[in-house]
Length: 400
Image (cartoon, rainbow, N blue to C red; front, side, top):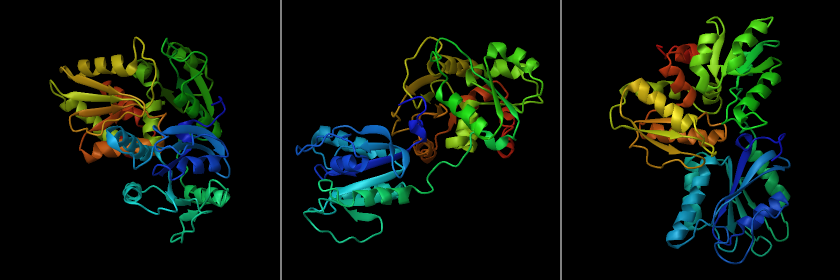
């Protein structure tokens, strides 16, 4: 993916499901016009979900996902089916490919129930219609042939119809700024920072500020004091990386709004009210409690890593308790959460909004408190209320 590409987390995720040899991989290839998925007459050719970011007309930037057959057998097959179902957590539109000669099966109906439970827009595509004619019963059903290309164009149009209105219309911060306002972004550059580039939330925030016709001034925490002094006009807001929250809060005058990238992203694609309510669980932690620290991306962890080193150390210092910690990263997220006294999640910049919402809902369903990095760090430093100034309705929830 090029530097100018839309990040995968911001793309619509289109997932193709179906029984083995229903032709889902062939339909996916026909829709995309590329050989993205391996096609074979051998049952179970697709053994793991395969994702590809691409431009797909008339939809624009998307991620297409091919999944293992939902009727796979045996112990290994059950694991493959489980992976297919897990893909639903990040699916914006599901395309269920059905062999028209077989029709809807028990496995198809089970998947459809899950799709409906999760309120995911879906399409049923009856493949091999050049061989077997099928009577269509709904406006989200269509007969296609991956082999002959019959109705593939119409399938893409039908997908576009399901997609309409799904785009994230939220803003990161531009809706809080006026034309000409100045936003200062504090970006520490240390050995963990990727050389030659900014991390995704920083890039996206800068773009969002520019889209709002405001100005972004980017500086390091070591240069922040000089940067503020050099500005002719006072900035409207300072947005900082969470790991230097405490240092930055001492530099930024109280009459300037201060927040973090993590807090902004909790509002952008998560549930800021929920993570603010959840952060108070830090005050209820006891010796032996287990805290889950979860990240949406995978990266090489280095000395001083925020998730594995800095955050656990801050929690132990704040609580004075002997806390156990567990970690997950990437697409990994536990199905069973009841063992945890608190979940602290990253900002979720690498996750789609649907997947981030799924994780929050899992915690809610099991009555497990969940918060995120920026909210937790601000709370433990006694500056959360100040950091929520861009969101006055939520700031009222916070006593400190």
